[in-house]
Amino acid sequence: MGDQELAAATWRKSRSSAGNGNCVEVACLGDGGRAVRDSKSPDRPKLVFTAGEWAALVAGVKDGEFD
Image 1 (cartoon, helix red, strand yellow):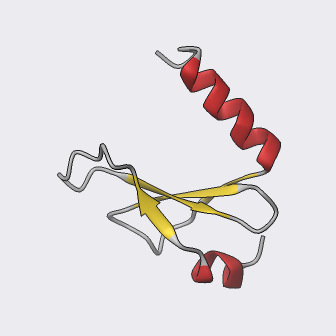
Image 2 (cartoon, rainbow, N blue to C red):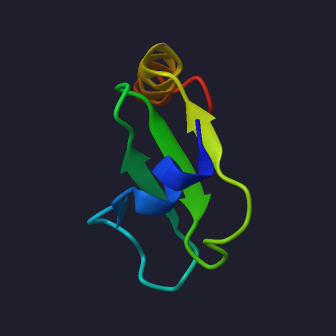
């Protein structure tokens, strides 16, 4: 994952964002993966997930694995 692809990515917040600045933003990547960043510090390092890793994370959240 190159810095240029992350710089050109379209970042979005959840519609259910609390609006208090404590949010993460997600960007879809060209290979089907996702990148996640802190909305307060967008220039800091990002977490980058492959498509498979992202699917596993979303499934885990839905199943309550992180509660």
